[in-house]
Image (cartoon, protein in one colour):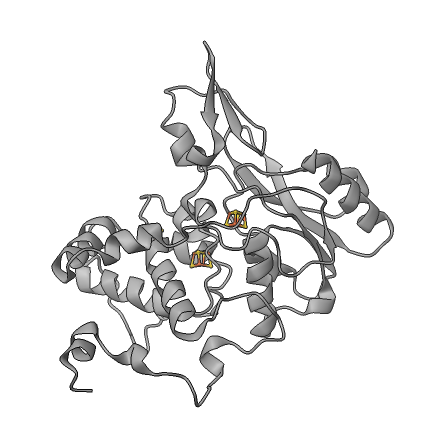
Length: 324
Ligand code: SF4
Ligand code: SF4
Ligand code: SF4
């Protein structure tokens, strides 16, 4: 149903000359992989579909279309990334036609893959159930169980910015968006470091697929690629790797829209989002700030309020000591 609506709208926009191209997803020969596709003529819209496995945020390739009037399919997190890019001067609102979808959430290829040794098809009802088709059988699973972690924890499935919103009933806002972050926060300092070392530092081999997939990592020269000065070593030394992940996470503080593209792109299945999700939580608690909701709103790091409490700078030990 969503696929038909998307094709119909893209065709109309292209026929009427309202856009030069439409950015969406298409299928692949793999049963649980979708990829971004750009169509430029009404005849091509038959390629388009609603992606149950649309793991890459379309706002990343959108930036290559600067200067063209482009249509784009936008879930909540794609729309939020577009908002941040407009706020940061990377995209112009007037160049875009945003077709918003109240998002049902995307399936996680890794979770699906683990369900059967050989899968020939995946049938997603976009509501409650997913049928995994194997050579011998069709096995039914709860959709919720197979969703990507960021979709299970999504706070904004409805796009905040759109020109046209598809009539569809998507997911509800997650009641517990920080459960996984809380599990790490509940560890001791030493255990948290062990988790970071074990799950992130020792497994990361610095391919930078996470950076390439992120719609908000758009610096022409990333600090890890700079050689004059060289901010960070190019080795797999744990300190170099830690520096990459910590600086990248801080560069995304108040900007990350929790689309999970970084995590989906990682060939090592590193739970990268937990770092940016933690910073999202801190921005929400300290400043009631959430990224990508209003293109006219000030950015977290370029605004200052003299009533900001500032006690976010204190460690819990300092607060408890009563010295400050
Ligand atoms: S994070 Fe939210 S908006 Fe983005 S794909 Fe998942 S459910 Fe949809
Ligand atoms: S850091 Fe990851 S989750 Fe956040 S916007 Fe970039 S790709 Fe999306
Ligand atoms: S994609 Fe994964 S392995 Fe590659 S740099 Fe990022 S975290 Fe490391």
